[in-house]
Length: 435
Image (cartoon, rainbow, N blue to C red; front, side, top):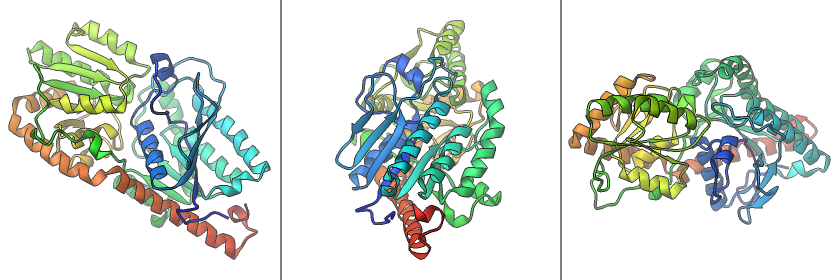
């Protein structure tokens, strides 16, 4: 019987988006699954729940050179599935066929759990979903096979947030929206990052208001807060101000717009260094674009950075740019706000809400390098503006403390597991309640 008592609760976390901290990652391995904000958020949430005493089993794809099982601590273990995929990178989401192969391996894993009776140990299934159809589909299959209540986190909604940037995205948007509707209707709880998505789901009649919960991304405040001796909007001492892009190299992240904006600023003689950290399957395209614009000597590509290195780089920046073409929230925004950096964000998804509709950052239209360059120029030219935005950003970031946000997610688990336990006691032979 699933339990809502945190002391005995067991969460089964299913996600194709995860990475193990502390491993040295090569560019080839990062092509397998480029690491971005979603991976970081899922990893940090898992670690925080473990610190809060929650037992977890996390099931995600096995990458080359990784073991089949890993123990994080006494409470949290990892099951790594090995999907057969061809090493052909897509432009955005890792290797071709990775999600489908992982999902089929997951179905087989769920069948084994059911046949062995091991499915009864889980209090709730939690699937992390992106804008692609497969995670929604396999979430429904896992719920049916394991007969456990299902919670979904929709990190990027195909119905509300996603705008296709590639041919594959345009082909998959229809199935993604279909399976998203199906999964939301069947899930016992749906977790979204912003109120705008919650309102959309309820408005579309996909779920009852009581079953959809707003739990935003979180940030480890202590990791990113600036030196207390430095003003919030002032970067650590640099010979030239740093304009920072931090994210995956994928079309939807708008890295190309950042590079075009950098080209405009360099051409007009702006005294700044442009720094890009992150990896992904379009990194080679970025290098080509830098050479075409003749600014490869002015833009520094740092590659993938570990979390402490990202924090140090963030604190050195004069301005942090998040040029996403679609984004529901964005962990980079929270990190930059925590570090007291002025930010330039695009007017997409929940980004304006996160920065307080201009209170903690400048907002520009997406896919508009001249507007992006103008906002960067404004931040660099006005220390008073940078200071004001930085102070406001730190105040806003305090509301996204990772532990507080994770406790809200724990409340969702407890409610779902508690309702399932009550239903099982009332009608022990019915549906999900029978196990």
